[in-house]
Structures are given as structure tokens and as C-alpha cells.
Image (cartoon, rainbow, N blue to C red; front, side, top):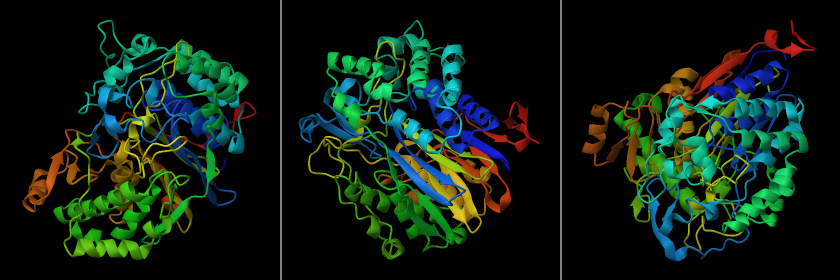
Length: 550
């Protein structure tokens, strides 16, 4: 390790775990995997070993970036028409669909095949330096010894239902184990500061540390999973677990004002990011002024156009012919920008739009002292509430984001993944990686990542300024704004005929966690809207043969 390392994520415990791995001589991949396991313990509705995600890995030795795609796939028993008669609406931001009896949202039928654990193992096998058991040790310790409910966790616990979607409290209390772990004696979610210990999850992770990830997909843990699914009407089978395989992919690339942007291919959200940057390159954003009425109006129209194209064209490329070349073409971006210049306003179609639903997900940005970088976003989607007795982890609820109407880009099909806005991204300048970033936040992830890039490139902000600045979004026909955007700005937008929805939170629209490496300096920033932290590890702190390196 020749330089400083840094890790940034929304959970201090998980960031600490990753930093400790770096101090032990682990590389960025070791730290990211240790951090991910720990996030699944200390933020159990945001992610976990039964979740999904997308990971960027930049190897300094080769100068190349590769992506590990581990989006969850619909069970092989799923059928396009199976819920077509149950549709009640669609969330306003396009995150998912509301069905009768919430069958896609809560419980056993909401679960997709979970590739996250296999992805952690695959990344570690390919690029890790420390033993597998070592990178699991911090997560096991937190599960055994306990942690406490942090303020951002409690805020999520307290989220109400969103027009037909289950409230977080219902997800916590769905299973007997969930009620015991996360609820007080009165049945309500535990309060900030309450301690949580999860001995069942500790034992599960110990088994995985000892026997490897495959015990989850075809061994003792798989037997428990499948017995639970079979007893409760779940769609998952042994064939689903066997077929649940992450894939290394070539990134998609673009440029923005001389910087190279490397991001994830479909079904991830990188295509939206590149399409929006291509449109915005045709405007002098700095001249408009940051978060001015003109700036928000122009960027919102860009967001709507990318959302429309996403809804129409972007899905699992194994099932959908995604016109990737056209969507990321500079000329196409110019044509859409010309529409905006002419004053044309895009219209986003939604089916009986309901409220925006609560969103879970989490993120890790890490760089090591040798210049390797990881940007990883992973999630449970909307957590299903299901915890198999004795295992301690909650499963994803990814069936809730599929379109229950057959014949559409996002429709259900056996073995199919659904689009997600996850876009772990690395921006390069002439010297190499300049910005490593990503975010949780459902459909707002890509909008948050976009604005941090704009803040950095167009407005010259430091990484802390770029991440902390108030944000807005338009994934519907409304403009959603942070409560820190002044009313004098939004009144002008409303006077121009735009529907503005003010968010009660000051820090919202994705929660970006980023590391800047520009100009040879390394700085990290955790989004103030979560509980996170950025930890720096210097070469002097790294243990080598039992002693710090000099």
C-alpha cells in the first residue's frame, strides 16, 4: 500500500469494518465485501445476502474497469400474466406497482432469486487478497455483539404505507423472527438507540465463512430456505438457486465535458446517466446558476426524457433488445436537447399513479492505497418481510418492481431481471479515477449521481459541497425538490406552469456517497441524509507481519 485508502458508506459500523480490513492489508475488494456483509447485519432492510446489486471494480494494475451484475431474477415459476388481473396502480416515480392484497410487495411470492451472496464470493475469489473468513469476521462480530438503531434506520422503520404498499413496520413484523429482532414489546419498531443482536444471522454467517457461499445455494442453508418456501407458497425452487449466477460485464462508457464516465450496463441505470449527460452537455449550466429556476427547469426536462426512454426501452438485455447505442449517442442527446430549447415539455406516462413509496438500498465507495477502486450499490428492493426461521436475514421483495401487464419492457418472465436505477459510477480525468460514487434511493439513485457529477464538473464544487448541495428530481410530470431549495425558486417554477412537490427532508433525492481523487488528493463524503461516514486509512496504519508499515 503506497498511498492513502478511503471507504465511504451510510453505516458507520460497516465503514469501520471496511477500514479495519484495509488496515489488515486487504485491498479495495476485500474492504467492499467486508463492508457489504456488515451492512446486511447493521442495516438489515437496506441490503443483505438475499439481495441484489451492481459492483464496479477498477484495477489500477491494468487500468481497466469491469462490472459484476447481480440483479435479482424472477423465479422460474413466474409467468407474465399471473398478476395481470390484480393491478391497482403504479407508484408516481415508477419504482413499482400496487397489486390487490399486495402479493408482489410483502411475503413469500414477492421474493426473487437472491444473487448477492454469490456476487460477494465471486468478487472476492477474483480479486480479494485476504482469506474469506477474515472478510466475514466483522459482520459476524456485529451480529453476535450487537449494534443500535441509528436515526436514519429509525426514520425508515417509521415510514408509512404508500397508497397500497406495505409500511416498513409491516415488513419488520411480518415474521416471528422480525418481530423479535426489530420490534418493541408493544409491537412498534424499535426506537433510536435500541440494541439489536442477531445470533441466528451470526450462525448463518459463520456457516458461510466455514463452508463457503455455495452452502446458501445448494447446501445446508439452501435446504432450510427451500423448505420454508415450499411450506409458505413461495415461488423459489432449487433450480432458481442453482441458476442464480452473477455475471462479469463490460461497462458502458461516455464522456462529459472532457471527463470519461464509466458506468453499468442494463438492467442497471447507467444508460440513463449517460443519456442525461449527453443532453446536458448542450447547455451552459454554469451560466444558468446552480439550482436556479432555469437550471432546474432544464435539468428536469432532461430527467423526464431519460425516464420516458427507460420505461419504454430499458430492461434485461437477455429478454429485451435495448437500443443502447442510440440511447447513449451524442447526436441523440443533441436532438433531445433541441426539443428542450424549443420549449417542448415531455410527459411521463403513469398508470393510476400513487404516492412515491419508501426506498431502501445502500452503497459503498472504496479506494485502496494501490489505486484500486470499488463502487457497489446493493439492495433488497422493497424488503419482503420474510425471514426463514433460524437464518436471521430478510429476503428481497423484487417481484414488486416488475410490470404485471404482459408484453411490456418490464413485464414478468421466468428468470428475468427488472431495470434498477443503480448506477455505481467512476469518472476519470487524464490522470485516472477522479470520482468514485453511487447512491441508495430507488428511482432517484441516478438523479442523485447525476447532480453530484454536474456539481463537480460544471460548478467546480469539492466532493463535500457536491454531495451536500440540495437536489431535485423529475421521474414523473412533477418536479420533486429538497426542502432546502428556496421557495422563491419553486414559486417561479410554478408560475411557469410546473407542478412542484416539496419534500419534507432537506437531504433527499438519492443519498450519494463519493470519493474524489482529483489533483492527487483523496477526499470522501457521506451524504448527510444518512448516518454515514468517510474513513481514511494511511499507509502507516496498515499492519504487515504484525506491525504497521513504515
